[in-house]
Length: 201
Image 1 (tube, rainbow, N blue to C red):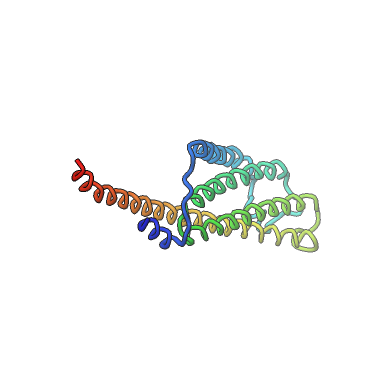
Image 2: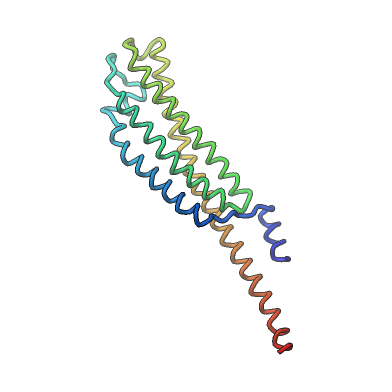
């Protein structure tokens, strides 16, 4: 009881939730599926001069990029599944308020990245419907907005990856320290009981 009270106070009352045997294979399958989606759709989501086109260097006649934008939806789904699964795992294993905070920030960063990516694709698609100057009027607004969404997506993905790594590091270290403390308490209890059991014999 004393060892449990120490653990409770040290991690501010947060207990890790071990993953069940049925959950672990499902999470592994989810990560594999996300990697497969990214790998399959990544090349299909590319088109010539994609970075220059996304950040404003657009010709007056937009190129046919509809198929690439559709494929980019598969890439978005892939990294959302991968990072979402990692967030689920690390949030379950987090035993400190620090780890829980990074788990929440990772979820919000992932949501921001996916939303910005979808808005970026929407801006690129709407830009293909307009044949006016890409640097003026509504088309100019789309050009600036698309570049802004692409920047937000990149920054949010960096935050999501960093937070996920920090959350996993904190959760794994905390879980390891707690398991060690509990094992030590169990061994101490056994050592205290052994002389009494010897006397009874």
